[in-house]
Length: 133
Image (cartoon, rainbow, N blue to C red; front, side, top):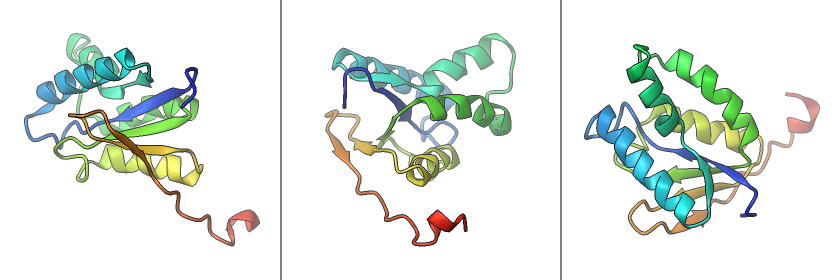
């Protein structure tokens, strides 16, 4: 990853086993560790959760938050998927993976304890993709 590449940090929120407040705290800690390691990350949970709480917004209104996060998905060049409890059940993480796969952008799986990242192999584009189908 280039030092100027902005990565989108996908973490579970509503599916996190310890609840949304703990999901926020753990996402912040993980984002901080990545930043200290030299990875430029945007964490939608670290950004959106405190705004929702302090502006009396519904933190569970997925339609609202997905729309806001769409702008950052377009800006970020890399997806980092934190393998925290609940990531595989998270509809938000699934949406983020799908977004990056459709655009053939790099995706990394992250062990949140060790910070070890492994780049995913991209699925081959459909042979009909160039025809717009």
